[in-house]
Length: 161
Image (cartoon, rainbow, N blue to C red; front, side, top):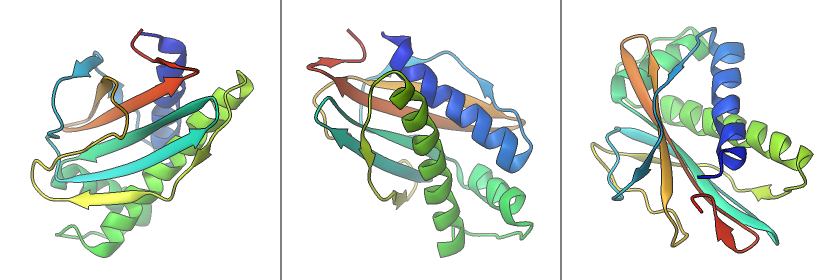
C-alpha cells in the first residue's frame, strides 16, 4: 500500500475535524475492504479525476455520529438524518477531499473533485467506480466511529500496489 497517496486523506480528516469541530479523531488500523457494504447509516461520496489520477473518497457515519457532528457544526440538535444533516455530511466530505487534493497537488498530482453525493440508509452499499481495492480507515470520535474509504488509481497503478 502506497501510504503517500492515503496519508493526505487521513491528514485532511484529522485537520478538518480539529479545525471545524474541535475534536481529534483517533485513527485505527487501515485495511483493504472486501465488499461494498458499509456499516454506516449515512455516507458522503466524492469522485475525483484528471489524466494522471482517478478515484473516490467516502466518509460513512452511524446515525448517532452524524447527528453529533451536525450539532457540533451548527449548534443545532437534530433527531433524524434530515436534509440539513445530509448536507453537512456532504460538505464535510467535500472539505476532506479538498484538503487531500491540495496536499496531493504539492506532490504533482492534480485532479478535479465532483459535487458530493450523500447516501442514506442502514448498511447501504458503496460502489467505487474503479476495479481496484478500496482502503478503509476507521476513526474513533469519543464513543462514535466513522469510516473513510479511498479508492485511487495513479498513472496506471492502484494505491495498493
